[in-house]
Structure formats: structure tokens, C-alpha cells
Amino acid sequence: MDQLKAMEIFVEVARHRSFSAAGKQLGMSRALVSKLILQLEAELGTRLLHRSTREVSLTESGHAYLAPCAASVEQAKLGRLAITQSVSELAGGLRVQAPTSFGAEWLADAIARFTLAHPKLQVSLHVDDNLLDPFKHGFDLSIRVGGIPDSLGLQMRTLAPCRGLLCASPDYLALHGVPHHPLDLQHHRCLHFSHLTQGAHWQFSRNHAGEREHVSVDITPSFSANNGKVLHQAALRGAGIVYDTTFLAWRDVLEGRLIPVLTAWDLPLNHLTALYPATRQVTPKIRTLIDFLVAEYQPIPAWDQALLDAHFL
View 1 (cartoon, rainbow, N blue to C red):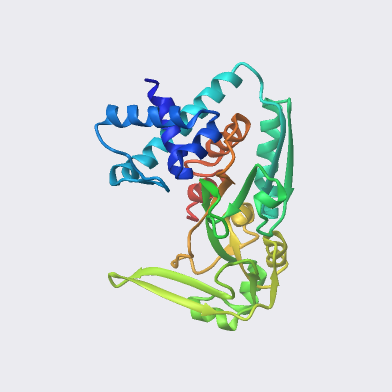
View 2 (cartoon, rainbow, N blue to C red; view 1 turned 135 degrees about the vertical axis):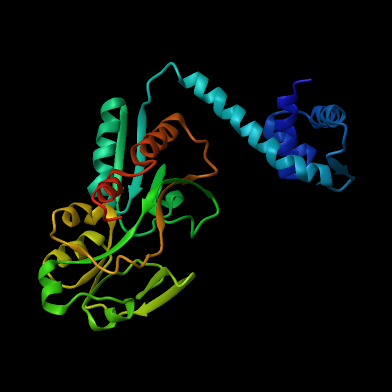
């Protein structure tokens, strides 16, 4: 018996709850599907399916076996695909979407170098701070800050931490003073990224007196925007205290144009993630790009490493 083939058949039967529908999907007769499932059950020494004249359902053993079985089948498919394409260069179109600031500051350079290594690829990078649906807009890969808030049909891989950082220009702090507690921000001009999921509520935490202290501050933004680069530039002009990201602020912090404030307090930690449709087979070009970006930004991305080396993190 071809056990891998039988496992593939079992997965299809479990999905369709029907021998006939699974056979149609696989191009096999109902009788052959049933025969191979019986052989798989005999090999495993347990019954995987309840049969009746009206429907097929999973036994307790079938429920336990389905997830690892489906994973093994998928890995085998990917292995076959990798072998068939390993002798050829990566080629064809590849559509990528990313937040505007990160796309311009870091991703564009990484993808440019990636295309030099794979000259037969035609990569299209779309930068947009809206949370665009990869299915609707036809993206092969979406880079986002955060996880999967709006679709269960996506898979995710973490690329890098996305750390928040409050900072302001030296001129602003000289004129308005340095905040020493998060509540002091209520008396400051605050520059707010309007796509923050918590709204205009900046959240802080720290270890204090042996406990974890949490503070949430309702701010009234003097200036808000849906693009981090816009706010970053406003902070450089002395317009207020910005809720920035380390991937944008690092160089200006190192060179003294922006000064971090409230550094004893932690802001919520987020992550840059790569999202791709779970219903599509991950082709070698998508997987290779994801692997390239993981290697590019892990274990510590260059912007955070620079701040660590200078003792700002």
C-alpha cells in the first residue's frame, strides 16, 4: 500500500465527509477510495471513520490523526514541488504589499538586492498603510505590523520586532520640558499614529516595587497621521513628542536629532510579520523571499542592533 497516497485520500474524505466527493476530487472511483481507507485503518490498527448510508464522520482516532496527517501530506507536496523546480531559476511575477514607512526605509532595499540575486523574477512592491486584503488585491505576500486580525485564511511568519519609541527634538524638550511620568503627556503636544489599534490611548508598563505597573494615557493629539514618516518629520521640526518606531527613529536618535523620553517605561511590543494565503500552495519564490527576509532581520534587526550598541535599548 502507498501509505502517503492513502493519507492524502483520508484527508480529502475527512474534508468532504464523503467517499464519492473525495474520489471525484482525486480522480478515483468511490470503491478504490474506500478500499485504500480500509487498508490505512488496518495499517494503523484503528478505525478512522464512521460509515453510514447518509454520511461519513470522523472517529475519535480520526480526529486525532487528521491534523498531523494533513501536515505530512502538505509537506510531501511541497517537497515534490521543490524538487521539480530546484533545477530552474525563480521566475515570474511576485506581488508584495507593505506599510509605507517600513517599505520605503528598509524593505525596498532588501527586495532590490533579492531581485539582483534572482533576475528572472518580476517583483512588484505596493506600499500602503491600509490593511489590504491579500485575497482581494492579489498579493502573494503582505508585510504587516501585527498578526492576522481580519482573516483566518492567512498564514503568518514573524520577521522582526517592531518596537515603539517616544521621542522629541532637543528644541521641543528645551521649550516644553521632559516628561517624567506617562501622565505628564497630557500636558504635552503629542504626535499620534492614527492606525494604532488602541486608538489615542498610549499604554505603558514597567517593573516597580516588585510588581508590573500599567498606565494608560488618553492623549489629545496636536497632530495625527496615518503614516509614520509624516509624524517622524514633524517631530524633527519640533512639533511634539512622537510615538515612533525604532526602524524609523534609530538614525536620528543616534545622531541626536531626536531624544527618547520615558525610557524607563515599556511600550507594547509588536512584530513585523509576513502574511500569505493559506489556501495557496507556498511556491518556491514566495518561500525563498520569506526566508531571505527572515535572514535579513533576525535575530536582531540592524536598526535595533545599532540602538543596542549605543545603549539606547
